[in-house]
Image 1: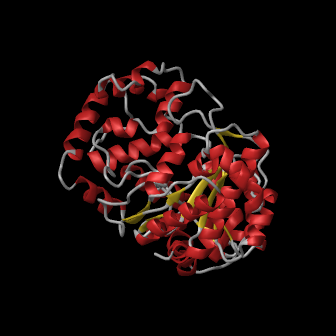
Image 2: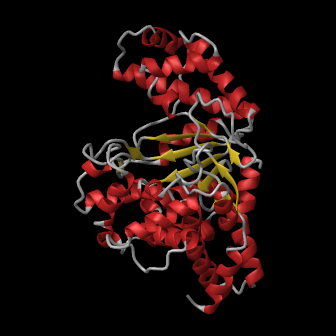
Image 3: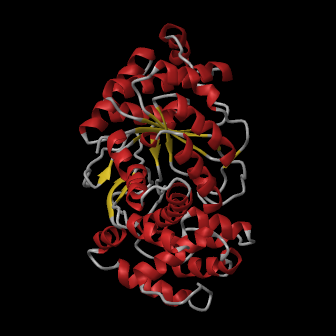
Length: 424
């Protein structure tokens, strides 16, 4: 890095982290062992891609043996940024001083991790060392939301099951139990969803969220039209694919309406195909394709101008469209660098396009998508390094901005926009 980039990065590292999307379990937020970290799907899917058999990943395999099995394939992924996250965790949190993780030293790292994670204050130590102030969760719709500090771990209502799995009797059973109701038609379904919003907002929820397939098109569906279909579906009868599509659209539109009523942003994570690689490891089966277009969401954005929609897309090819929608629609916000776009080669050009084309107030710079607290620091640091390069080249050098002005822009996309959009 240049001296200018290093100075800017030094200031960016001082900005405390508000992480607006994660998969952290607030009841077990930090890792218990190295096994928890190596079990992050990035490592299991990369190792599997490099030739590792899935058998050592079974729950019956002792944790140290799983670690040794994955370590055999770590040399094949040393080139990846995901590997660099693991090394930064090892250096920062576990006092590991080797430059690589190998089958020969994995045992020593395993023991160092065990010694640190066993301390009673481990979670607090990780949060302090990472500069993390708040972490947004991904809560199932039937989560009771008790037993954790909601000012530290902010609830978020995840709604995929309601929109896409209402044909599963277990989903309906969970909804009935969570809302103390019996859902049997359109009216009772809407009432139950309303109770979910009441429950979540009462416990400090600040957003609703969903991941969406590339061919989903949200459109309004009249309650009287969908009611007979819902009655048959909820009674256990079979419905056609087109009929179930109308149910999904009705539920989705209902969620958007409640977001408007309860003044919650609606996080849309658009474009994921589930179970593409059916023989993949757990969470290592999903991919994207090029069919996704935000034109499918035009009716939604027009119908709910009072709802803010933070949008995540999976590819750089979709980024230009996202930037354009944030450029035009007041209620569309660019959000993070999701999944397959979450490497510096894509983050830097995507973030540059956003910063130089869309209003600064319309950007949520980054979220970790982490499953354990330890991953928040290296992932945010990856983004901050890319951001420092953009600020140096495009703003300080090209436009003559002062370094203080560039840092203020960084603070806006990293922190103040998150505070305003999610009201935290």
